[in-house]
Length: 428
Image 1: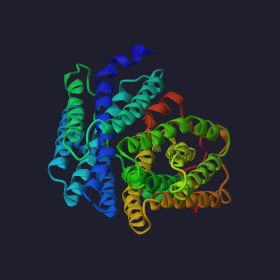
Image 2: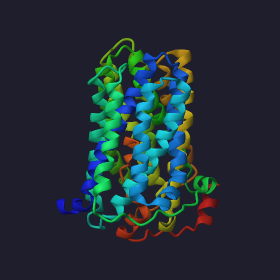
Image 3: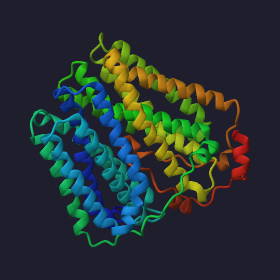
């Protein structure tokens, strides 16, 4: 199996450096914004701007890659993202930071798109699972390491911004110097939101809810920790514990969803995530270590929800529609991640830091209620017609899991007797 990594070794090295720099920025910027006396709403809009740029990058990114090729597009996006990291430190202005975060989101959406299409094309049907498992491990490991690097220097000083820029810049070197051939050009994908909702209301609502809740956590989690009295090391540890828990929760929840109705697992994860959010609200002032306990539980149940929602949607989708569905669900997630931080930041401004997890608890409870309602209207598909669960890399804010088209080629076509028209009628 190690031989399977030979064609993508340079790319995986670039991934490690890139995500380490992005992980550092993701924790550093909210902390520095708080030091600069940005309002909670300013920080929330900053987070929304990142995901707005991310959504635009998902839509327009393939055009940029087709125009100049994978390697040139990769180096261009890395150069822009590296420069932006330094501009943050030079001009600590909230309005400028909104624009900069939007541009960063665009760059990283294109970068992730290039990385994952490249990994997929350089893998065979026999090695794809192993390659993407290694990719997942690298994602979660270096993201956590990048968050912990915020403790190396004073967030109010320049060095951490310089370090983030250096990591992102150096990420271009392995890709620029590789002799491996670039993958085939990316194709256009038509996204039809209304059709997507008709295919699977629960999957659609699940991805939107994950965007609302997880987008708020990524944007405002460091602010919550900082305003709850944590120092810089505590903030880094708080964020890392949640990410690690999200990784641990993927496998058992995914396995359970393959054995029973996925919607039951979604309801259970939502209720547990909601209770974790409530615990964060009520124990924040009384039990300091409880923040880490409940943040672990939040990550354990909230982060795998995207993969569960995608898997449930794919249970009702024909193989030829996988790319459209994967792209559409990603866009729905991004829309939620644009809206969520703005709402959560407004609640935090009115009620204090507890407003963040009060909001995520409400979102998870609402998704649980909607899913229970849908369970009464639509039965689960037969076991032989269900798609296999695939862990989602959105835990680490990447673009998508394994390319569904390539995976379907490996697994064979899914037998699904329902036509799209029959699915639409069944859901309405």
